[in-house]
Image 1 (spheres, rainbow, N blue to C red):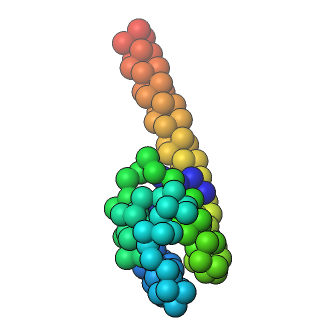
Image 2: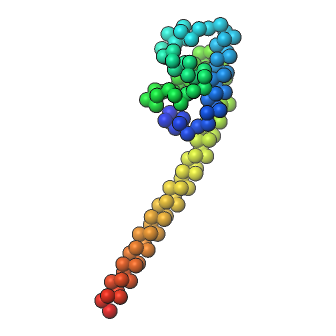
Image 3: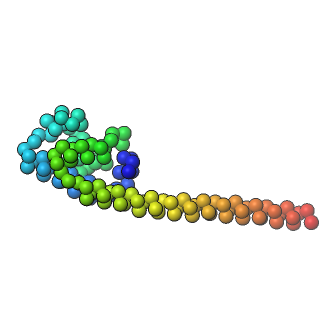
Length: 127
């Protein structure tokens, strides 16, 4: 999944991931500042991940990579949430493929119809 596609995802998934990570960090009694230095990820980004506000992180930042790194560092299993994100991606891609196919078919049909009408008009005027 491409990182910019996160914008299409449900915020509930991100909230769940953030809660799991925040809970594990607090259980391990780790400070965000120390984790930030270790992972070389901005503290503000780690805070947004914990709050489930992942979409507030700028798009040019590898948001999904940061989430995975943070979860791995704290040994938080987010595989269920990631698979939920990926499964909704495959559904989006399937639907997008159908829309593209229908859109292209409609374009071809309208071009055919235009040429047919043009041909009829030409035949009408020259007969």
